[in-house]
Amino acid sequence: MPDMLKMEASFRPCQWLNRISRPSVLVVLIVLYLVFVLLLFPALGGGSGAVPLDLMFSYSPGQAYSMIGAYGPEVRHSYAISAMTLDVAYPLTYSLLFSVWLTLLLKSNSRIACVIRMLPFVILIFDLLENSGIVAMLVNYPQRLEMIATATSAATSLKWVFAATVIILTLGISLYRLVGILLRRLKRNESQKLT
Image (tube, rainbow, N blue to C red; front, top):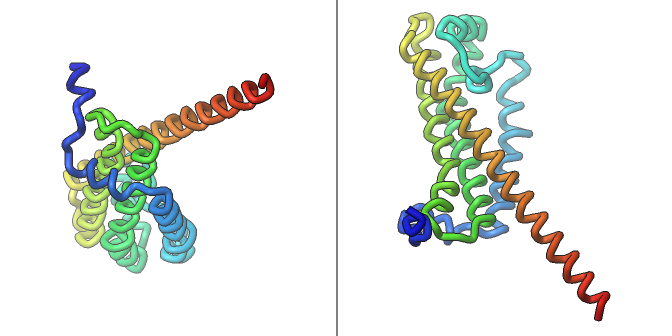
């Protein structure tokens, strides 16, 4: 098994990530992420005060339909449009952001490093499944799609579990790298003082 972990990653998406991962690409993705979070999503919310289903960790079909009913026709329409447009581009943006960040942090081309770099795209998959379910519930309201609501809640929960995992991994590896840099500088400064 250890030999398997040391083998070069031949998974093509990881090779693609290696090619595109540059600090400048990371900065562009951070700016795009901030545009979504600070400008686009607040503007789309329009002060309705409605909590989107995709910001919850989980919900029952009853809770989902209670919230969807409370949204009203205009908010339901706006939410459906957002889920099919902005909320497709947004998860693609943050998935790329975290994958590029992890690629810059993990210099190894091992299979395990490749798997870690690809984890943000698991979030993307669950986010897109969640969006599909939410749109189905919104456009078919007042018809209740109980199985879709249950599956959508599961996708939402899995999205958040993987998001937390990726954030913790990314911040943990970043902190580890930062501590390593600081320790090397400290050793270099001490050795310069001795000479």
